[in-house]
Amino acid sequence: MDFVILEPIIHAETIAVGRGIRELPRLRKLYGSGFWRKRKGETDIRLPDGSTRRAELHWYEAAGIGKREYKIKRYLD
Image (cartoon, rainbow, N blue to C red; front, side, top):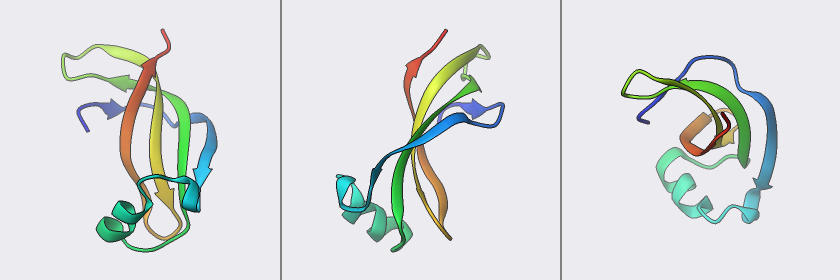
């Protein structure tokens, strides 16, 4: 992750669950089995150059495992 999340993620919503996630076998192999969900939301982030931007993030999440593999999908400002 080459950015820092500055505030809590807002407008979080689930966009895929279980078999709807293409990366499910890889996630289970790396982090373990669980009820995996792909989610998205908005937050402020700090980039490596020190600038602050509003961005839409996507990540994977499972109960008992937590949030993994944050990705910036687009900037909102």
